[in-house]
Amino acid sequence: MEIKAFFKSLRDSLQQGIYAVINPFVRLMIRMGVTPNMVTTIGMLGNLAAAAVLVWAGVEVAGGAPVDWAKVTWAGGLIIGFSLFDMLDGQVARLGGMVSVFGAMYDSVLDRYCELFTLGGIATFLACCGNIAGAVITFLALVGSIMVSYVRARAEGLDIECKIGFMQRPERVVVTAAASLATGITGQCLCPASTFDPNLILVIAMAIIAVFANLTAFARINHCRKALLAKK
Image (cartoon, rainbow, N blue to C red; front, side, top):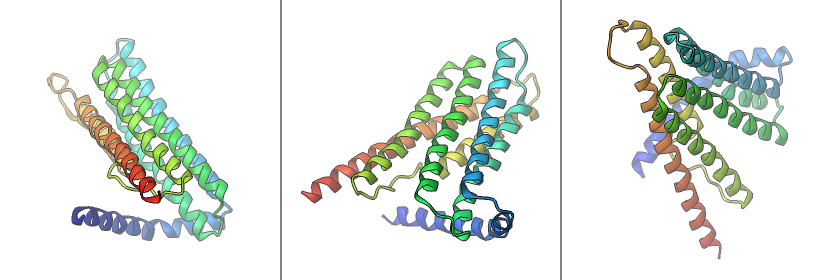
């Protein structure tokens, strides 16, 4: 329990620090007439662009070209940049007095689209590079990511608060973006004659998400089971 409390405290502190940085920009957006749903949509389109860049890089490899690691780096940068909109839309809603039930639902739905796009793009890229095992691992990461959110949604439909688990969306975004950036930068820096495959970084990151996201999903299922038994 102490470890959980430590990570929760650390996460809350980081979140408050980020809010302190972005709030002036958020207030500017509000004065410009930007709505939370507009911010959410822009974030989703940015993640779609990141996925498109990864698929583009993969298709080039499938066509016989060497891996364009700069595209992988750009994809990681796009994931980081546009995933920040996931925090911006909530702050725009709160500080601008535009919180709504539909906005919350719209945000959740587009979050799932973002993960489908980015992890789908990574799986396609790895498959085109001939790393079928990595593509399968990425698929398992995608399954875990979606199930973490689905179990929470079903739990809330049963009036059960279910936010437990380590590999929630912010952690998944950080791991995915950091791994994409690290893979691309490593690929650009390595000598072409190097035997190290930079995609290994990406595969390890996807494995981490696959393991911990699915563990989080099952932990939430068990949490709901206990909560329902307690209600009897």
